[in-house]
Length: 353
Ligand SMILES: *Cc1c(COP(=O)(O)O)cnc(C)c1O
Image 1 (cartoon, rainbow, N blue to C red):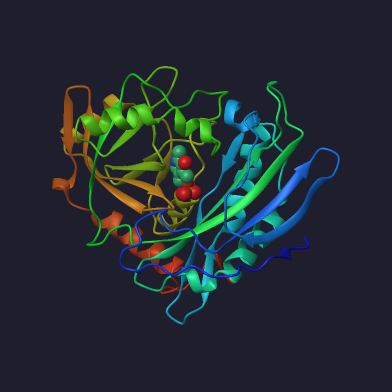
Image 2: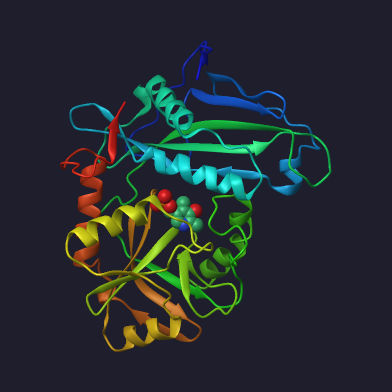
């Protein structure tokens, strides 16, 4: 892939690394590449970050033909920058795009685009503990016409922003509401894709949970509302009687890179990990009987999010006295250790820029 560069006239001032938050400060540059049905992918470029003009009839604004990804670049103690399994994000985006009838962006080009943009923005990769550069690749239809069909033109872009330590003072258990009315995904739908539409449909559940004093929603399977699937932007794992259970990847749950990495670590440490359906009634029963030892969400943003409370209808269980479990902490320390280059990466998951 040939990347054309266009330089900024002035660069932005970098924000305070101790106050980055999430997704607030965009960097100086962005990657852009266009697709047209007659030309394929063309005009790859890294240009000054800025607004893009869209026709009001742009199909994405009406029919949500949009997919995205999320990964991070990490600053190691020796100053080098590294990525974590970026080809998994590239492949997942291809799967999302296939489902939404959008063109595939080649895996090698995806990784090259991310590497080139991070290289260009290397000064933006923060070095304060547990901060990183969040990278957001995304694709959308740009054709202007109101028909519902596969579009003739798309844009693939990558933007990035430095993000703060997710937990300022150690892991902080969250309160989760099991949603028993609204659903996120059904078999045959788009639940396994990272497409904008999935998230638009999930906000109402999140609003409801927050109104009731909970941090996040745990979605049940869309057909029977019996089995636990995942949290809004995280996969979820349960440690019951010493074994780990998480929902299988069968079309409704997102195949998280963090989920996959945790499963590798857990199996390596000798744990049994079962990718199986778990009924919410069995989960609550295990909680009541004191067999639900730990619960944690997994995703790129937080890495691991310990769950302290689970509420389902009128029932509530508290997990591990609202404290972060031992295994949760060990998984967090190990994975972040590999991601920030503090621990040896025997799995070959990282690549330096
Ligand atoms: C992004 C996402 C995840 C986590 O995936 P990672 O690759 O681990 O970041 C899980 N569930 C949903 C719905 C997501 O959007």
